[in-house]
Each structure stands twice: as structure tokens, then as C-alpha cells.
Image (cartoon, rainbow, N blue to C red; front, side):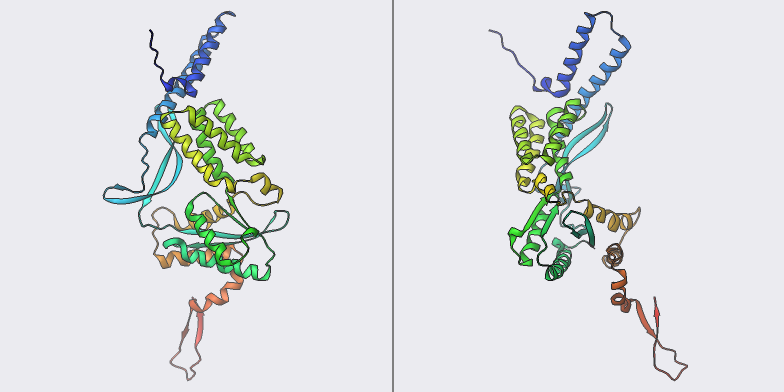
Amino acid sequence: MAVKQSDDRLQSPASQQLSDFLQVRRQAWQQGVPDFEQFERELHEQILNLEREYLAEDLARYDVEAEQIEVGGLSYQPVLQAAETYLSAAGPVRVQRHLYRPAGRNTIGCGTLTLYDREGERLQTLRYARMPEPKKVTLAAQLHAEAHAILGARPDLRRVYLADGADSNWELLAELERTLGGNPAESLQIVDFYHACEHLKGGCDAIWGESTARGQAEFARLRVLLKEADDGAEQILRTLKYHRGRATGSRRKRIRAALTYFRNQRGRMHYAAYQRQHLPIGSGVVEAACKTLVTQRLKGSGMAWTMAGGQAILTLRSLLQSGRWAQAWPLLAADFRTPVVIPDTNTEAPLRLAA
């Protein structure tokens, strides 16, 4: 009795692509004498694809998934899972990994409130940014006050909450909805389409290989389905579930991560219906606020900010970018002016100078 062992790696996308390439080459000899130089170049690229695939699989094994880790005596907590590109001797290798940040450390928070007309055209965007604080309490309070004031004047407006898949963002927005005291049926939650596509790409890379023509084609196809089909998210889930059952090792782990994301977020992924209602599906507005309000001004090389100094910059920039400078300056002016008394005169009237 013969016993045959198979290596799952030999059934990988790059391995299969190499096997198909060699088969085509053998068939080409039956038609005559094929070009050797072209074969050499193409074979080299096929081998590099296979090498990159094996390297990506091995690098993925170094990823650490834990509720907390320690590095150099400091504790770190998980933030998100994202793909990173590493340079190898075979070229760039993209690997899905868990990212961490120092435990107890808060980050600058950005938020926007945007008004749209019935056709989905953006009318006005109000931008906010706060220096690091626990649970973004001040940012949440500002967004609540703004939304409460607008809904007080226009209670008929529909509330749409849009963010990426981070639990902390949805917890903040859920609390905001609760404090507004409206009818939850009149509000809607949408997960950012482009963040969803990043997770979809990670799943496709795990199934078909990152640099393969099949992987790129399947990602493009599934991306269109997710955006335009009424059951797009369900089709994505069925695809991921099917291939998870056929995969092993790190590939199975990466597919499972994408599957978990879509399972958790599918109630916020009815993109075809959102578009028919002229609703936004991308968080580009708030992403732009993070870049122009914070990154471009506060994160230059060598910069360091105190809480008060950084917040002063963020407040002024948010007023400017929200088109509220003229209205806000009379309220701020008092903090930037001080009385100057001239002792040589008999008058006690102060002279006010703008700083």
C-alpha cells in the first residue's frame, strides 16, 4: 500500500500559478521552438511570486495576538489589525498583523458633523479636534451640543453615523444617539466602505495571493458586489467562509480575521441601499479633518506639544476650517486682550490691545 503525503503549501495560489506556467511551457514545445529569454524572465518572476508567498506566510507566524503585551518593560494594548508591507530579497511582502499602542495612552480625537441635502450634496462640515483624553469625553460633549442645537431647529433631519470598525468609535456614537433622545429607528449606522475594502483585500490576499492576477481580479469583483449588490456583504461572507474551510495555517487565520470583521459589521454594510438614498458611505470628510487639523500642524518632525498649547492650535484651526472664525473671534478676543493702564494720566480708562 502506498502512502501519499501532500503539503498544503504546494496548493497555494503562487504554486498553482507556477505549475500552470510550466505546463504551458511544455505545451509550447509541441508547437515548435519557443523563446528562451522570455521563458527565463517569466520563470524568474514566477519563482519570486512563490518566494514572496512563502515569506508572507512565515512572517505572519511572528504576529502576536493578545489583550496586552510588554516590550522593554512597557505595556501595550491592541489597537487594530492592518496589513503592513515589508521589503524582502524577493521584493515587497504584505502581511496582516496586529498593531499595539502604549497602555493607558490616549490619542488625539477628531470628529465632524456634516449637513447634506436630499441629493447627497455636502452643504457644510463642522470640524472638532481634542488633545488626548480618556474616552474622548470633551469631543463627545462637543458633538452632542452641536447635534442637539441643529436638531432643535430641524428635528426632521435624519441622523447618519459613519465610522470605521473600531468598537470605541461605535460606543461613542451610540452614547451620542442615546443622549440626543431621538427615535433610534430614525438614525442609521454605516461602516466606512473603504475601511471595509481594506479587510476584504486582506481576505483576498490570504485566499488567492496578493500579487496574483486571480487575487486582484477577485478583489475587484467582490468590491463591486459589496458596493452595488443588495446582498453584497452576505456574498462576501459566503465566499470567506467557503475558503476558510479549505485553508490551513496562517492563511486560515487571516481569512478568519476578515470573516470576523464582516460578521460584526454586516448590519452597517447595506451600501447599495445607502447609495439609492443618496447617503454617504465613506468617512473621507473626517479622515481629511484628521489630516488637516492635526497631522499637518502638530505632527511635524521634532514637534512636541503641551496639552494647553496643542489644544489652542486645534481649537483655532477647527474654527477656521468650519467657517466660524468671524462668529467665534468676539468670544475669544477677551482671552487675548488685557487692560494697559498709563499711570502718567489722570484717567483710569484702560487701553485694550490685541495680543
